[in-house]
Length: 251
Image 1 (cartoon, helix red, strand yellow):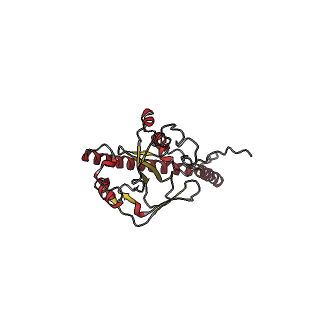
Image 2 (cartoon, one colour):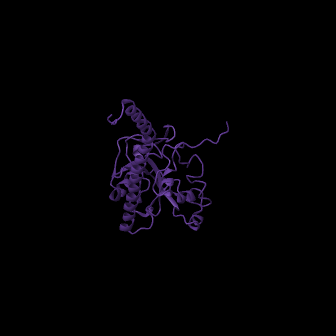
Image 3 (cartoon, rainbow, N blue to C red):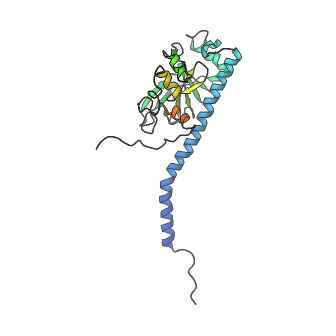
């Protein structure tokens, strides 16, 4: 009586290993992107909430309704005094070098923040105060209110870099841009509130991440300026990593 064959032949094992390798090659990049997306969105949400809450607490402590009424801005022309005042709430640190940021699309340099104008917040975000002296007020503030928008004044820019100076430092990947509004909250560039502000309340689509405009677009083929808005709009999820936008050009 012949014994039944048990185990696998060498050929069968090699074929199985080859198949597993193909499957891994197809799934691992996607898995890696998903893990990175979860980590980055979580860090971004934490930083955004922490900064907003701390500024809000400072405004409550000083009993003011607008960021510009904080004691830190008694001398708006003096950045050092402003930073010193805000440091009571945000724990600001000086930086040793300027911060350079690159495009998500092709890695080209798109922004440099001089070290004199920025401070690093303990959450790894950077506050950029160059705009404070010339605070922007929406000419259509009443229309913004009418449309449910909250950003009536853009007091400054806050760039949240979720991993600090660690590379790649790319917009839309680990760097995200926000406006600090008069109410002490951070609102994402590319989001509906900032879109209403940027267009004097006329259209929240014009400056929205989904508008298709290069300045605000957010996909793997864009600079990534408006990605903070997209992430919030999509429920604090990053869904665009590794996805190239399909070309609409005719062959």
